[in-house]
Amino acid sequence: MRRVVVINAKGGCGKTTIATNIASYYALKGFGTALFDYDPQGSSMNWVRQRGGKPPQIHGVAAHHAQTSVTRTFALRVPPHVNRIVLDTPAGLKGIRLGEILKDNDVVVIPVVPSAIDLHATAEFMRDLLLVIKARSRNMRIAIIANRMRAAVPSLSAFENFIASLRIPVIARLRDSGNYLSAAERGVGVHELPPEEFNDVRLDQATLRTIVDWIESEKIFPTVPVTPPSPPRAGPA
Ligand SMILES: Nc1ncnc2c1ncn2[C@@H]1O[C@H](COP(=O)(O)OP(=O)(O)O)[C@@H](O)[C@H]1O
Ligand SMILES: [Mg+2]
Picture 1 (tube, rainbow, N blue to C red):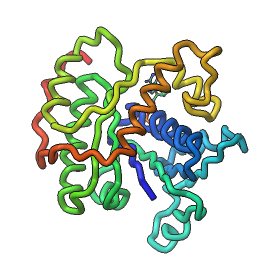
Picture 2: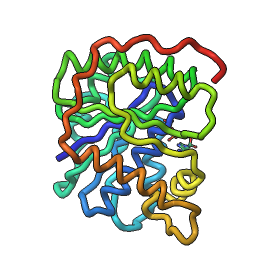
Picture 3: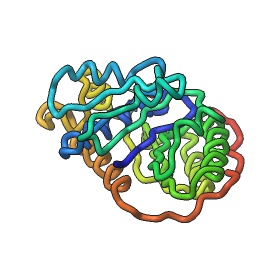
Picture 4: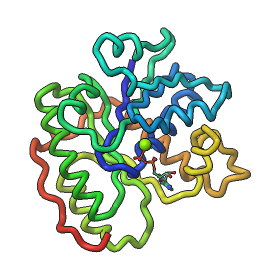
């Protein structure tokens, strides 16, 4: 069993996009796949519903309903064939709630978009996250995914510097692509979009592959600093 947690307290950075695409890719590869939606907005659950019965099947779990420890055990059960669980998480997650969601041996992926405002939110979130990890486990692997990368973003070098200062690996860069929206609307991942119909979707598929390859590898990266440095000063986003 492997659990992949897609997380960042900042909304709109691509958590649902990345979680649903990872789930789709796992399912296509023949893994028993479940998608846990911890966001009360339920975007990932909507995505699962949108799939209808379309194979490969993905088991959706509305995990935010699991409030008490009694209902949680029941609600978070998955069918026996499931060996990959992808967690989509809500914005604003911190402190105790963050600690409740993360488990030992989780793989944690953090989407970040290159704007100064997002970097501030992400820096605060990182501090929280690293404290939880330090208290709980040394076995979590963490990676950053740079999302919505366009060639000429003014704050790009500040972005790059900040990310580099965290000493957490950036495992992929998602381009800004309408294919993610097209996939989301259909309840599929980019690997389920036919390349004849969707412009350059092979690029997006390759990016997804890179992400899952890293998740599935057991590569050890340098220990992360306990207190991340300050982000760059806010400028035009
Ligand atoms: N790489 C991308 N290219 C284009 N649109 C994107 C990309 N990543 C996310 N989006 C769009 O941005 C919006 C927010 O993304 P979403 O995954 O819902 O973020 P979150 O779950 O973190 O709030 C969605 O409309 C999504 O389709
Ligand atoms: Mg979301």
